View (tube, rainbow, N blue to C red):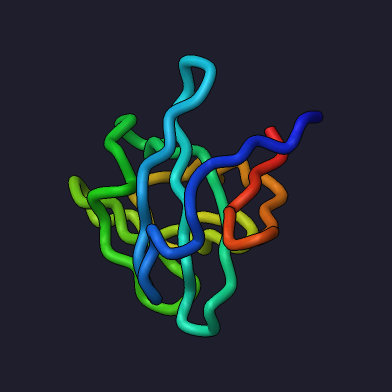
Length: 102
C-alpha cells in the first residue's frame, strides 16, 4: 500500500484530531498525550458522523453525536452505542510531515 503525505505534523496539536480526505474516503489523524500520531477511518461506525469533530483524551476519541468512545491506537470500541471497531492505518512522521499507509 502506498504512503500518502497527509499533512504537516504541526497541523495537529497534542490531544487533538483533524480530518483528512483522500481518494473519496475520510480519515481521522490524531496526536495523543505522548505526542504520537495515529490514523483511523474518519467516520464513526455507528452513524457515520465525522470523528474529527470529537474530543480526544489520551488515546481515545469520543464521537460528537452519541458519545461512542474508540481507542484510536487499535480502533477498538470502548463505549457503545457503536459496536464495530474502526479500521486503523500505519502512520509515521518524516521530515515534519505525517504519512499514512492507505
